[in-house]
Image (cartoon, rainbow, N blue to C red; front, side, top):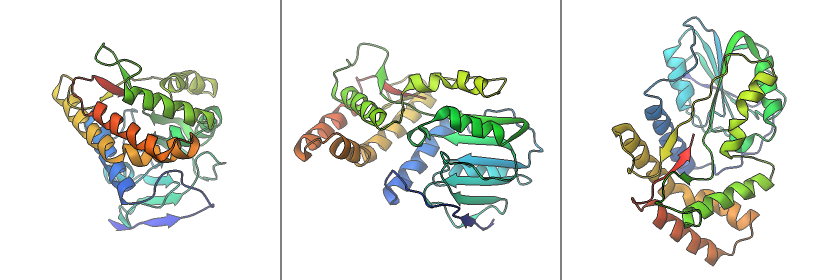
Length: 276
Protein backbone atom coordinates (compact mmCIF):
# COMPACT_ATOMS: atom_id res chain seq x y z
CA UNK A 1 0.00 0.00 0.00
CA UNK A 2 1.11 3.57 -0.56
CA UNK A 3 -0.14 7.12 -0.68
CA UNK A 4 -2.68 7.46 -3.45
CA UNK A 5 -2.12 9.94 -6.23
CA UNK A 6 -5.03 12.30 -6.97
CA UNK A 7 -4.94 14.31 -10.18
CA UNK A 8 -7.54 16.82 -11.40
CA UNK A 9 -7.20 17.38 -15.16
CA UNK A 10 -10.33 19.50 -15.56
CA UNK A 11 -13.11 21.24 -13.65
CA UNK A 12 -16.17 19.02 -13.29
CA UNK A 13 -19.53 19.10 -11.54
CA UNK A 14 -20.81 16.17 -9.47
CA UNK A 15 -24.52 15.52 -9.86
CA UNK A 16 -25.14 13.42 -6.73
CA UNK A 17 -24.66 14.21 -3.04
CA UNK A 18 -20.99 14.14 -2.07
CA UNK A 19 -21.11 13.27 1.64
CA UNK A 20 -20.78 10.40 4.09
CA UNK A 21 -24.24 9.10 3.24
CA UNK A 22 -23.34 8.90 -0.45
CA UNK A 23 -20.07 7.14 0.35
CA UNK A 24 -21.93 4.59 2.50
CA UNK A 25 -24.43 4.06 -0.33
CA UNK A 26 -21.69 3.35 -2.86
CA UNK A 27 -19.88 0.99 -0.48
CA UNK A 28 -23.11 -0.92 0.14
CA UNK A 29 -23.75 -1.24 -3.59
CA UNK A 30 -20.19 -2.51 -4.05
CA UNK A 31 -21.04 -5.32 -1.61
CA UNK A 32 -24.15 -6.16 -3.63
CA UNK A 33 -22.19 -6.32 -6.88
CA UNK A 34 -19.60 -8.51 -5.16
CA UNK A 35 -22.27 -10.98 -4.04
CA UNK A 36 -23.97 -11.00 -7.44
CA UNK A 37 -20.69 -11.69 -9.25
CA UNK A 38 -19.64 -14.38 -6.79
CA UNK A 39 -16.60 -12.42 -5.66
CA UNK A 40 -15.25 -12.02 -9.19
CA UNK A 41 -13.83 -8.61 -10.04
CA UNK A 42 -14.38 -9.06 -13.77
CA UNK A 43 -16.34 -11.25 -16.13
CA UNK A 44 -14.13 -10.41 -19.10
CA UNK A 45 -11.53 -13.17 -19.71
CA UNK A 46 -8.46 -11.12 -18.85
CA UNK A 47 -4.95 -12.50 -19.13
CA UNK A 48 -2.67 -12.35 -16.09
CA UNK A 49 -0.14 -10.15 -17.90
CA UNK A 50 -2.31 -7.06 -18.46
CA UNK A 51 -0.45 -3.82 -17.73
CA UNK A 52 -3.02 -1.00 -17.96
CA UNK A 53 -6.63 -0.82 -16.75
CA UNK A 54 -9.11 1.92 -15.89
CA UNK A 55 -12.28 2.04 -13.80
CA UNK A 56 -14.59 4.72 -15.21
CA UNK A 57 -16.92 6.12 -12.54
CA UNK A 58 -14.94 4.51 -9.74
CA UNK A 59 -16.97 6.03 -6.90
CA UNK A 60 -15.29 5.29 -3.56
CA UNK A 61 -12.57 3.36 -5.37
CA UNK A 62 -13.48 0.04 -3.73
CA UNK A 63 -13.43 -1.98 -6.97
CA UNK A 64 -10.28 -0.27 -8.28
CA UNK A 65 -8.43 -0.96 -5.02
CA UNK A 66 -9.36 -4.65 -5.09
CA UNK A 67 -8.45 -4.95 -8.77
CA UNK A 68 -5.09 -3.24 -8.23
CA UNK A 69 -4.34 -5.57 -5.31
CA UNK A 70 -5.23 -8.60 -7.42
CA UNK A 71 -3.11 -7.38 -10.37
CA UNK A 72 0.06 -5.87 -8.85
CA UNK A 73 1.84 -5.65 -12.22
CA UNK A 74 -0.99 -3.65 -13.79
CA UNK A 75 -1.16 0.15 -13.60
CA UNK A 76 -4.75 0.95 -12.63
CA UNK A 77 -6.57 4.28 -12.94
CA UNK A 78 -9.78 5.08 -11.07
CA UNK A 79 -11.63 8.04 -12.61
CA UNK A 80 -14.66 9.79 -11.13
CA UNK A 81 -16.29 13.20 -10.95
CA UNK A 82 -15.91 13.33 -7.17
CA UNK A 83 -12.69 12.94 -5.12
CA UNK A 84 -14.15 10.68 -2.43
CA UNK A 85 -11.53 7.92 -2.64
CA UNK A 86 -9.16 7.03 0.24
CA UNK A 87 -5.61 8.37 0.46
CA UNK A 88 -3.88 5.07 1.18
CA UNK A 89 -4.16 2.72 -1.80
CA UNK A 90 -2.05 0.16 -3.69
CA UNK A 91 1.05 1.70 -5.28
CA UNK A 92 -0.09 0.70 -8.76
CA UNK A 93 -3.35 2.68 -8.45
CA UNK A 94 -3.93 6.34 -9.38
CA UNK A 95 -7.18 8.23 -8.90
CA UNK A 96 -8.26 11.00 -11.29
CA UNK A 97 -11.04 13.55 -11.02
CA UNK A 98 -12.33 13.36 -14.57
CA UNK A 99 -15.48 13.44 -16.70
CA UNK A 100 -15.94 10.30 -18.78
CA UNK A 101 -18.33 12.07 -21.14
CA UNK A 102 -15.67 14.62 -22.14
CA UNK A 103 -12.80 13.99 -24.56
CA UNK A 104 -10.38 11.45 -23.11
CA UNK A 105 -6.74 12.51 -22.86
CA UNK A 106 -5.14 9.26 -21.66
CA UNK A 107 -1.84 8.72 -23.46
CA UNK A 108 -1.47 4.97 -22.86
CA UNK A 109 -4.01 2.49 -24.28
CA UNK A 110 -5.71 0.10 -21.87
CA UNK A 111 -5.99 -3.67 -21.72
CA UNK A 112 -9.24 -3.36 -19.79
CA UNK A 113 -11.89 -0.67 -19.31
CA UNK A 114 -14.35 -1.28 -16.47
CA UNK A 115 -17.49 0.75 -15.78
CA UNK A 116 -20.19 0.36 -13.17
CA UNK A 117 -23.43 2.31 -12.73
CA UNK A 118 -22.52 5.29 -14.93
CA UNK A 119 -25.77 5.53 -16.95
CA UNK A 120 -26.85 8.64 -15.06
CA UNK A 121 -23.74 10.44 -16.30
CA UNK A 122 -23.67 9.40 -19.95
CA UNK A 123 -25.90 11.15 -22.48
CA UNK A 124 -24.19 9.97 -25.67
CA UNK A 125 -23.44 6.26 -25.38
CA UNK A 126 -22.20 5.79 -28.98
CA UNK A 127 -19.61 8.55 -28.44
CA UNK A 128 -18.58 7.09 -25.08
CA UNK A 129 -18.17 3.58 -26.52
CA UNK A 130 -16.22 4.95 -29.48
CA UNK A 131 -13.78 6.51 -27.02
CA UNK A 132 -13.50 3.17 -25.21
CA UNK A 133 -12.65 1.48 -28.50
CA UNK A 134 -10.02 4.07 -29.42
CA UNK A 135 -8.33 3.83 -26.02
CA UNK A 136 -8.11 0.03 -25.88
CA UNK A 137 -5.16 -2.03 -27.02
CA UNK A 138 -5.87 -4.57 -29.79
CA UNK A 139 -7.47 -7.52 -28.02
CA UNK A 140 -8.50 -5.37 -25.05
CA UNK A 141 -11.81 -5.66 -23.22
CA UNK A 142 -14.51 -3.25 -22.05
CA UNK A 143 -16.99 -4.34 -19.39
CA UNK A 144 -20.16 -2.33 -18.69
CA UNK A 145 -22.05 -3.11 -15.48
CA UNK A 146 -25.31 -1.18 -15.18
CA UNK A 147 -28.58 -1.21 -13.29
CA UNK A 148 -31.78 0.30 -14.59
CA UNK A 149 -35.09 1.96 -13.80
CA UNK A 150 -37.99 1.57 -13.48
CA UNK A 151 -38.40 -1.19 -10.91
CA UNK A 152 -40.46 -4.07 -12.21
CA UNK A 153 -42.25 -7.25 -11.18
CA UNK A 154 -42.74 -10.56 -13.00
CA UNK A 155 -45.87 -11.71 -11.17
CA UNK A 156 -49.13 -10.18 -9.94
CA UNK A 157 -47.83 -9.18 -6.51
CA UNK A 158 -47.70 -5.53 -7.62
CA UNK A 159 -49.30 -3.47 -10.36
CA UNK A 160 -47.83 -0.56 -12.35
CA UNK A 161 -49.80 1.89 -10.18
CA UNK A 162 -48.17 0.69 -6.95
CA UNK A 163 -46.55 3.69 -5.27
CA UNK A 164 -42.97 2.47 -5.66
CA UNK A 165 -43.42 1.51 -9.30
CA UNK A 166 -45.12 4.83 -10.07
CA UNK A 167 -42.26 6.60 -8.30
CA UNK A 168 -39.53 4.75 -10.21
CA UNK A 169 -41.33 5.30 -13.53
CA UNK A 170 -41.61 9.03 -12.75
CA UNK A 171 -37.89 9.23 -11.96
CA UNK A 172 -37.06 7.43 -15.20
CA UNK A 173 -39.19 9.87 -17.18
CA UNK A 174 -37.83 12.98 -15.45
CA UNK A 175 -34.22 11.92 -15.91
CA UNK A 176 -34.98 11.09 -19.54
CA UNK A 177 -36.27 14.61 -20.15
CA UNK A 178 -32.86 15.85 -18.99
CA UNK A 179 -31.27 13.81 -21.78
CA UNK A 180 -30.21 10.80 -19.71
CA UNK A 181 -31.72 7.39 -20.42
CA UNK A 182 -31.43 4.99 -17.46
CA UNK A 183 -33.98 2.49 -18.79
CA UNK A 184 -33.24 -1.18 -19.37
CA UNK A 185 -34.23 -0.69 -23.01
CA UNK A 186 -31.33 1.72 -23.43
CA UNK A 187 -28.82 -0.83 -22.15
CA UNK A 188 -30.33 -3.51 -24.38
CA UNK A 189 -29.00 -1.38 -27.26
CA UNK A 190 -25.40 -1.61 -26.01
CA UNK A 191 -24.50 -4.84 -27.86
CA UNK A 192 -25.38 -3.24 -31.20
CA UNK A 193 -23.60 -0.02 -30.25
CA UNK A 194 -20.48 -1.96 -29.29
CA UNK A 195 -20.47 -3.83 -32.59
CA UNK A 196 -21.12 -0.62 -34.52
CA UNK A 197 -17.88 0.95 -33.24
CA UNK A 198 -15.85 -2.19 -33.96
CA UNK A 199 -16.06 -4.50 -30.93
CA UNK A 200 -16.32 -8.27 -31.38
CA UNK A 201 -17.10 -11.11 -28.95
CA UNK A 202 -19.93 -9.05 -27.44
CA UNK A 203 -22.00 -10.71 -24.71
CA UNK A 204 -24.85 -9.36 -22.57
CA UNK A 205 -25.81 -10.92 -19.23
CA UNK A 206 -29.10 -9.95 -17.56
CA UNK A 207 -29.69 -10.25 -13.82
CA UNK A 208 -31.95 -8.90 -11.06
CA UNK A 209 -31.55 -7.17 -7.71
CA UNK A 210 -34.60 -8.18 -5.64
CA UNK A 211 -36.02 -5.52 -3.32
CA UNK A 212 -36.14 -7.30 0.03
CA UNK A 213 -35.43 -10.96 0.88
CA UNK A 214 -38.43 -12.41 -0.97
CA UNK A 215 -36.53 -14.17 -3.76
CA UNK A 216 -35.56 -17.83 -3.69
CA UNK A 217 -31.91 -18.71 -3.28
CA UNK A 218 -29.47 -17.68 -0.56
CA UNK A 219 -27.54 -15.30 -2.83
CA UNK A 220 -30.73 -13.62 -4.03
CA UNK A 221 -31.97 -13.18 -0.45
CA UNK A 222 -28.67 -11.58 0.58
CA UNK A 223 -28.80 -9.20 -2.37
CA UNK A 224 -32.43 -8.36 -1.63
CA UNK A 225 -31.79 -7.61 2.03
CA UNK A 226 -28.85 -5.34 1.23
CA UNK A 227 -30.66 -3.56 -1.60
CA UNK A 228 -33.63 -2.93 0.70
CA UNK A 229 -31.22 -1.41 3.23
CA UNK A 230 -29.74 0.73 0.44
CA UNK A 231 -33.15 2.03 -0.59
CA UNK A 232 -34.37 2.64 2.96
CA UNK A 233 -31.37 4.81 3.70
CA UNK A 234 -31.11 6.70 0.43
CA UNK A 235 -34.36 6.77 -1.54
CA UNK A 236 -35.47 10.13 -0.12
CA UNK A 237 -32.07 11.79 -0.50
CA UNK A 238 -31.70 10.64 -4.12
CA UNK A 239 -35.30 11.49 -5.07
CA UNK A 240 -35.58 14.97 -3.61
CA UNK A 241 -33.56 16.83 -6.23
CA UNK A 242 -35.43 15.16 -9.08
CA UNK A 243 -38.98 15.20 -7.72
CA UNK A 244 -38.94 18.61 -6.05
CA UNK A 245 -36.32 20.32 -8.20
CA UNK A 246 -36.93 18.93 -11.69
CA UNK A 247 -40.59 17.89 -11.38
CA UNK A 248 -41.71 20.77 -9.14
CA UNK A 249 -43.40 18.53 -6.58
CA UNK A 250 -44.52 20.40 -3.42
CA UNK A 251 -42.70 19.40 -0.24
CA UNK A 252 -45.79 17.97 1.49
CA UNK A 253 -46.62 15.83 -1.56
CA UNK A 254 -43.01 14.66 -1.73
CA UNK A 255 -43.07 13.63 1.93
CA UNK A 256 -46.28 11.65 1.41
CA UNK A 257 -44.89 10.00 -1.73
CA UNK A 258 -41.75 8.90 0.12
CA UNK A 259 -43.88 7.48 2.93
CA UNK A 260 -45.84 5.35 0.45
CA UNK A 261 -42.71 4.29 -1.45
CA UNK A 262 -40.98 3.14 1.74
CA UNK A 263 -44.11 1.26 2.78
CA UNK A 264 -44.13 -0.57 -0.55
CA UNK A 265 -40.46 -1.54 -0.61
CA UNK A 266 -40.75 -2.94 2.93
CA UNK A 267 -43.71 -5.12 1.96
CA UNK A 268 -42.27 -8.63 1.50
CA UNK A 269 -45.34 -9.64 -0.51
CA UNK A 270 -44.24 -7.28 -3.27
CA UNK A 271 -41.90 -9.22 -5.57
CA UNK A 272 -40.16 -6.25 -7.15
CA UNK A 273 -36.64 -5.99 -8.47
CA UNK A 274 -34.27 -3.71 -10.34
CA UNK A 275 -32.94 -5.02 -13.67
CA UNK A 276 -29.14 -5.14 -13.99
